[in-house]
Image 1 (cartoon, rainbow, N blue to C red):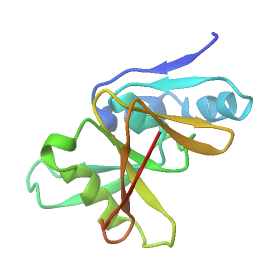
Image 2: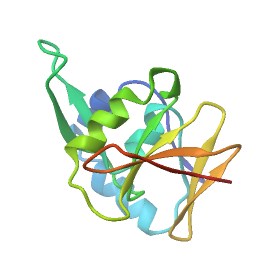
Image 3: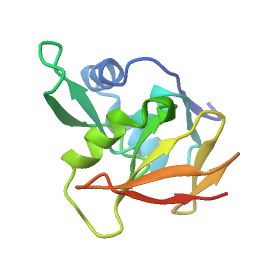
Length: 141
């Protein structure tokens, strides 16, 4: 294939299928070999480092789980109307580390990981500090 495309849906369910079928190492090797990868909605979250799973019994309880990690940050997609509630929960679960952030991919905007750098396209991407969820300057195109 010329491109690996990750579609939207449920991030947790997607990672469970990927892990159950043993595909995570395969996707990571494709990435390391330079294969272009694209994700939309939950697919963009899957390409990142981590995501958060909420308890069905108690929505106040959540836990972090690994995603593919082909991009060294964690993302949420189109959560700006909810104030990035899920992304902020994730940010607060992650250890505070200077310069580390989670990133909100605003609807109609995208992030491009190329040459070891994250670039905003179509408009700014929202960033929040890990550990605290403190708002950081947006990543501008």
